[in-house]
Structure formats: C-alpha cells, structure tokens
Amino acid sequence: MKRLTYIILLAVILASCTKGKKTYDEIGESGLTTRTENLKQNLLAYEEQGAMLGQMYATAEGIGWQADSCRSDINEVTGDRPAVIGYELAGIESGRKQNIDGIDTTLIRRTAIEFMHTQGLTVMLWTAPNPGDNALEKGSAANERLKAWTLKIARFLGSLHDDYGIKLPTLVYLYPSGTGKWYDRLSAKDYRKLYAQTVSWLREEGETTNAVFGFSNAAVTGTAEDFMERCPEDDVCCVQLMWLSSDTDSYAHNLQSMARQLSAYCSSTMKPFGIYTGLKGLGDDEEFWTKSLLPVLEQCRLSYLMLGRNHGDFTQADFCGPYPGNKTTGDFMRLYNSNRTVMAKKLNGLWLKKGE
Image (cartoon, rainbow, N blue to C red; front, side):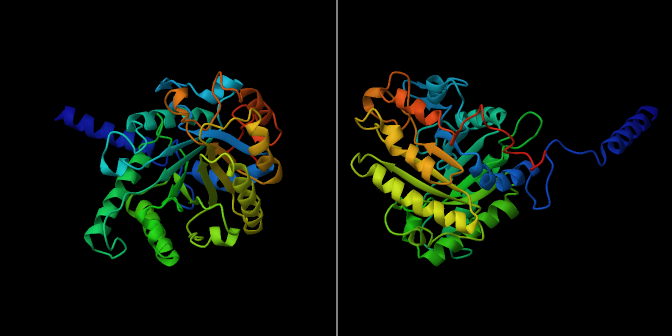
C-alpha cells in the first residue's frame, strides 16, 4: 500500500513540475510552430539578401553516389553547403518504400532531418496520383481515397523532427501545375477547390503544424496573369516557377522571360517567388551558368533558386547541377560568388523572428 501511495505521489509531483513548461517546439498563434511562422514571414524578406541556392535531393544523391551522409555535389564544387533542398513526396501516400523518383522514403526523412542543422529552406512537392473520378465529390470513393492519402502525407510531415521533437519547417507545393497530371484537367475553380480541401485535411485532421504552402506552375509561355490563373491565393504564401527542360535552344530565353514577369507580379502582390529549374545535361556551353541563370538572379527578386536533381552516372547526362569534373564548374563558381547568391555560409535567421 505504501509503495502504491509513493508511486501516485511521485506521478503527481512530476505532473506539477512539467505543467506549464515550454516545449522545445512552440506553437504560435496561427497554429503553426513558431519556426514555421517565422519561415513564412522571412521568405519575402530574404529576397533583399539574394536568392538561396540549392538542389533537388541535394544531400540524398549526386553523380555516381547515393545515400552518402552529408555529401552533396554542390558542396564538393563550392566548399559550401546548399541553402535549399527539395524532395518529391509522391509515392509516400501509397505506402511505397520509394517515391516516384526512386528515392527511399527513409533516405528522404533522414537527409531532411540532417538538413535541419543548416536551418535552410526545405521544399517539398506532392505530385499526387489520380484517386479516380469525382475526387472533389464529398463521400465519393475517390474523395475518401484522396483524403486517406493526404493524411499519410500529414503523418510523414509530422515525422520530420529532431531528437528534441523540433519539427522541420517546410514549404510544400501541392499539385504542381502544368505537368500534365490529372488535376491539370480540372477547371481553375475546381483546382482551387481541390487545393483548399487538401490544405484543410492537412491542417485540421492531419494536424500539420510545420508546413506552409505554395503554388507551383511549369508554364513558361503567356503572361504572369495566365500563370497565376489557377493559383489558390488564400491558401498559398509563395509562388514557384518550375521549368525543367532538355531544350538547349529555348531554355534560357523562356526561363528568363517568365522569371522577369513573375518577379514583377509577385513583388506587386507581396508574395515570395522561387524557381525550381534545370537544363538536363547542361548543354555544351561552358558559360551556361552566367548566361542562363546569373541574369535571372541579377534582374529578378527571388527567395530561392533550386536546381533539378543530379542522378546516376555522368554518362547518362541526367543532371541539372554542377559536379566535380563537369566542364561548367568554373562558371558555376561565378554564380556562387555573386552577391545575389546565398548558400549556407551566408544563411542566417531564416527560422528566427525578425529582430532576434
């Protein structure tokens, strides 16, 4: 009896000691973690410093390697770590061990959590598979399937935390537009409805507290207004131009033209603007970076510039970034040394409240 009384008393003491104690990952007024709130506010402010530079799967794979802890091709070229890292989430919702790009889910989680030490920008895209007909009809089989998939994505996002329980702030692009997927066939009104519904599931039922959302589009023709026609303005805090190409003749012109238009548009509407881009194989010009991307950095206000992935062996030419031995590495250093480029050594305070 005495032993039971002691255990109960100890439990009461421990409970009283921890009551009111702050957790390591505080929740702000918006329902997001304070670090995520700060990320949302700072994305626009960071445009004054320059564009954060990084790459898709930057520390997960590169030319001739994969899953080599803390390694990245950009780091091996510049001696500096990327300030941005990106991942595709599609495949996770279906319970697969790999995403649609063939990257292990465990590797995505591990490298994303390791990237927390940089306190840089983590970008995630969800190119959701087609759940079937009538996905917007509440109670339909397709709608319930999409909801279940969304909640699996929510669980994955919630699992991205360090040993202290601090969650990784993420910028998530749901349903990247202009890629020919099922949701591109929806009207602009229905696309916005789909987006809002998914955000609601993530926030309210998935209890996602470490993500803000953006609108991504691969359109490089037309006007900025055409580009933004489908954008769910109320649900997104950032706009991304996604332009991955293998056409050396039109790549730079199309990218620079649309980037200038979107930069002006986003500046007028006070939305951060980022670019996810790459020319597969980089072409034959050794001055590719200063001719194609440096003008974008100099002429546009950008929060970030994320390059497409480097994958496989160099002979496959499946790369959008520099790597040791590539003929464009010298020119890439000119891009890196621009005062409009921010990598880890210049990165400071992205997750902190202004003034801290």
